[in-house]
Image (cartoon, rainbow, N blue to C red; front, side):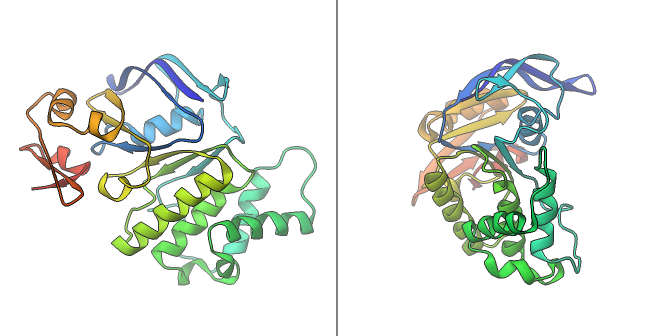
Length: 260
């Protein structure tokens, strides 16, 4: 289980997260929603032990959050993570695998076995020999996901894995992550701007706004009353055709759902 106990994180004299207490269950899929600057990436960095806390405590599988925790696989946003290059997919993962090592280095055979197993898990064996410059957005995302799977983590932190993907590629990525979650018994925290693509896959939703957090079932959190309380202004939530729509004069409220 991952737990936050009275966590506050401040930057520049302003609380990004304020006195947050919550817990994520083992093997659950949680969508992490909220406007830009709400603290989604900050939360992930804190769980990774990379972001100092102003107050409180974070525990990851019974131990304090710390750098280099091999129980965590992290997939960062891709805008600057994989620049176009002639390096091939296999070498990207091999370099990442070496970064996971403790003690004796992996032999060439073991390294290749681990890399190819991770690529196979994301349906990306063909990416091993392809240079990054020739990969599509969806293929780059699968390569990053494979990197996050190295070392057999128990928790995946996925920071905007749907960014720049078309609807078909988004659906394929979510289905792949949901399958991995079941086959590997993973806990998944999945940051996104839009809740709708995740509705059929996630167990609960964490919504961040204005330093506050609400964690629960979608029908408990994504409500007119709930979002109005988080934003401190009137928000109307509508449901139609299996989708969620937000009506508000605040543009930042539109990042979580479709808007009308």
